[in-house]
Image (cartoon, rainbow, N blue to C red; front, side):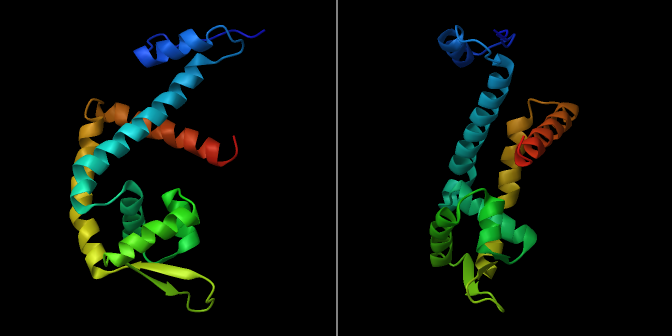
Length: 170
């Protein structure tokens, strides 16, 4: 039997989980705490952004992400856009239908392979993302203002390290 490791400073939620699974063997509570907190922070940030920034334009997180990716990288095939947005092609299809109906993007057949679809920002979509991004970034700044610049850099580096590990199959 392995050891049970517990976080030294658990929140009330983490303590409830510890109480429930504490009798199980080989539970790594430190790892569980990290992953649960990453998930909770991601959900809290997403909800805040949708409420405080994106709501006024009736955009979802995924809609904003699609606009942002197209703004940064330019026209893109739907399969690559779905990958960059972290959603399935099926989910992206609905998001793009909404964005297209609002005049923010246009979908056209690929120039050499008609089976593929390329998505582009419209001038209206470009104007929208250029207006929203500074507000979005201001909220990002507020979210992490509790951390010093050095802590922000460390957290970003550590999260990139975990992301690279997960994406490589680890």
